[in-house]
Amino acid sequence: MIIAGLPPGEEIVRRRVGAVEWIVFNRPKSRNAITHAMESQLTTIFKQLNGESAVRAVVLTGASGSKPAFMAGADMGDLQDASDTESAMRMEETSEAMLTALEEVRAPVIAAMAGACVGVGALIASACDVRLAAASLKFGFPIARTVGNALSLKNYARLVAVLGLARTKDLVFDPALLDGMQAVAAGLARECLPSESGLLERAQAVADSLATLAPLTLWATKESLRRLRDAALPADQQTDLLLDCYLSHDYREATAAFLAKRPPVFIGR
Image 1 (tube, one colour):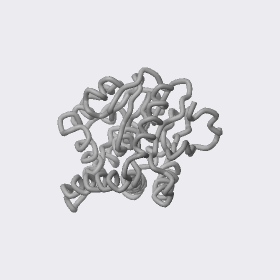
Image 2 (spheres, rainbow, N blue to C red; image 1 turned 90 degrees about the horizontal axis):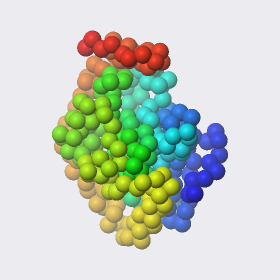
Image 3 (cartoon, rainbow, N blue to C red; image 1 turned 60 degrees about the vertical axis):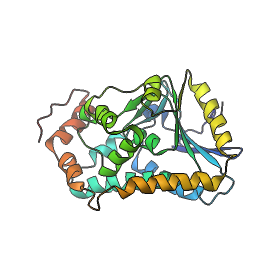
């Protein structure tokens, strides 16, 4: 397999296959939940890729544990740290720096999605250029059921650009997750593969094909569409909406309930 024999203890693993760079989230025991340290590491890697002319395409995927997973959101320990304005905004800034660096990778980026792909994981996949799904995919933003926070204005814009307004609302208002076939039907994924091994093989084939195309054309297309999307964003990023959620009783209740393995009780404050 393309990502067999991953070294334990390395949370981000890089593999080169021809002109294709594979980046693997490697915390299978935590279903590849991302930490602040991983976000910072990914930001550095994404920026480095633009200086590596031999890389003509990139694939992001997650290591499989007892179950397949692309990325099961943010590490709960990090979410608990968002207890005041400074820590909440620092968490958002670290995540946004990573997503911006991902979108600015000059080469086309493919998300090979299997199993859990929620929260930050779903945002990373949405920031990629091509998305391929396995039938096992579980994609969405169950934050209204779990942690009671909100996405940033720019992240809502990312989702609307990929899914449209109505589907974006559905993914937050209805905590049900999209499987592989539903992701294709929603326009999120290009295609759905029946197995994880088939997904990785297909991702390599798509990446190999993209690697033969004119790199400046692909980059100019990516960058033009990103600029068009961001031009619609107001100068004020409306962080007040984020802070209303992160500093609320409901957010503290939700993180405590998660650790206690009980349903949260939301009161709207």
